Length: 353
Image (cartoon, rainbow, N blue to C red):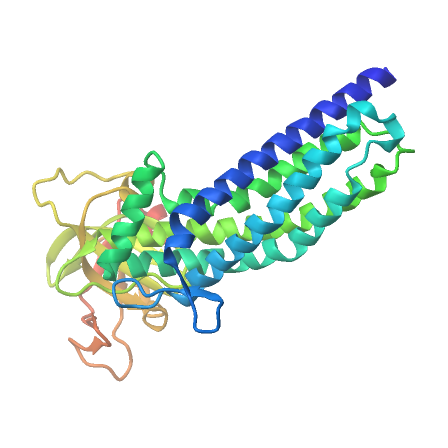
């Protein structure tokens, strides 16, 4: 049994080294194909970021790319030390088979570089999306990167550091289960797993924020027309989506409703020839182009009331005190016409909204 446990521990160590080598290769791909072409020597002899299409790169994106450089350098050293240590294991007695030095470097990375990366990741993605819309040269750079990497976007590579952290936890927990309590690596492994769990909490929070941002960016990309509100924001969250009928002065139009943490958006599909069927939430999110029909801010949402008239499934909007019909707030058309209302299929849906 002891021999089998030692053999299993060796295989786990070799798998850990193999995973690390693959990860370093992916970081190198980001370095060689994207980061290095964007760098330029400064007057002081250091390296800076060149302008793209006559405009500087977004600061948040620069911060993320700088951390990628740091992670690549550190993981290159960690990978070499880890592979060297585990490569010597077959020639060493069991008690001397250690990953102590390599894991010390890893725990330092988790509390430093990865904490910074996770804290900046979501903002940098939003900055990159926005910059690619307004900068044709940068957009072309992203297309070239996709072509060189079998259709994978830069996003698919920037998420790798985040996805890599859970792999450490799984492998180190397996290694701990095959390590004798008396072995010198036991305390080191437990400490590393504890640090990884702290890092995973930050990763999970970041992933939730990223998913929210992706949903809102998807909605933003669907909006067209003369007036397109800016829906993407670092603190805005999508709360609920659904279908309904928007009424104004006796006229109704099918709309998709998007309730955010700070506003309510109603938009109609641009394709007039489409069948006017009620769509499932996931279908709505993947739909075609839309035009805004109504946008209410957080303060204006306080004026939503249930309708006491003929329809039991309607909610309407009371006039905001002191405002005038046809009022416009910032660049967004908004009316305080009390005849505005949204009709839903059931009272339950109305109550939920």
